[in-house]
Image (cartoon, rainbow, N blue to C red):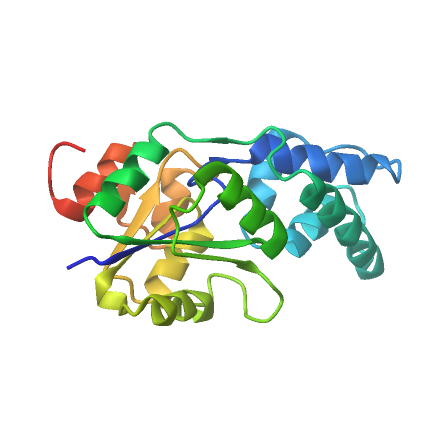
Amino acid sequence: MIKCCIFDLDGTLLNTLDTITYYVNVTLKNHNIEPITLDECKSFVGSGARNLIRRALASRGISDESLTDAYLGEYKSYYDSDPYYLTEPYPKIYELLDALKARGIRLAVLSNKQQTATSLAVEHFFGDRFDAVLGDGGDMPLKPEPDSAFYIMQKLGVTPSECAYIGDSDVDALTGINAGASLNISVLWGFRTEEELTRAGGRLFAASAKQIFNIIFKEKEL
């Protein structure tokens, strides 16, 4: 029986692609580096801010790790100053979360985004709907390592067999597998294709928020 749903944030609950691209490009512009496109950004995200900046720089022929460190700080500062800019929830996400809570399901967010931006965005868009919110605080390995998922499960008093993990990326598919989640649901509206998700081990797919509910409860209507 599912007692807890752990959601990824970017690409799953919130469409942040424009936001991320904007702040990466503000950072790059400061150093006269060619901006990245939305499609490029979509392929760079999912493994934390450091890897995002590293991949953006590498795409422009820059591999200096000292620059990655410097520009990462700038990017985080810009992002944390207004983490809601250009961001919006995906369709019917509010209805899904409220329906899950009405069934007594505990809700959590687990993101590789920096902790400040994660917490601010969740509070701004979702209020107190979530029982646990965990971003990258620098003290645990990033997804797809399962440490942070296990931490949330322990905090909420549930086991992997009682959890559904929901995300949009190959990183998320692997996280659900590594954490032993009873249900590992990949959404199809985010930053990766169904083919990419399948290669990463994804087997349950949802094309709408309603389908997430239906998979969990094996019902036809939200």
